[in-house]
Image (cartoon, rainbow, N blue to C red; front, side, top):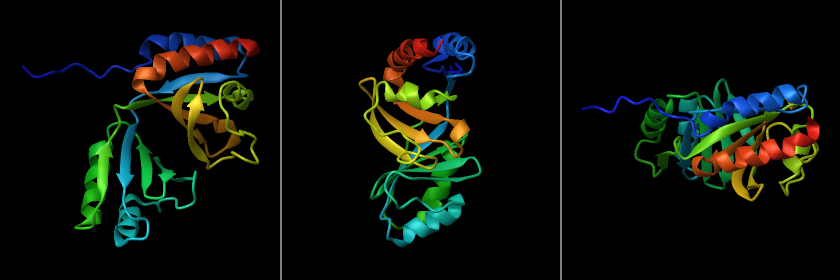
Length: 197
């Protein structure tokens, strides 16, 4: 018998509490889960021919500057290391992304891994979003240091995360967290957000 169960979000049970915090803070902090985003870990030689071919196939050039983000349409590429990127796209697009990358790379050595189930994404937005994240993050989150188009692997509330400053200041941040730590981090954010309620 085929498994027909729908995927369950790691933060599904916390959705109401996240929304309640948004309302209680009067919009000063907005918390929500963006579940099931496609996430592909890509490793290749940034100076090799595959990098250009893959960029062309995806419709974006992979960011080469450390801790930067390139976005084209609904696809976002995060620089994680000199030869590693995380591609984030709409839910259900992981197979398409994988096949486009492999076809574009041809015989060039690449590593393409679907890590969509590994993490979930929390949206942290609102006028006090930076302040909220600063409670448990060692990064300098001031817009001059960590403005739109920046990303970093760091810890937030003692949890390893990837933080992404979205394209516009009002768009807030994505916090990509491992699914097994998502509940803990949501509780931590909800507790830290009580200051703004």
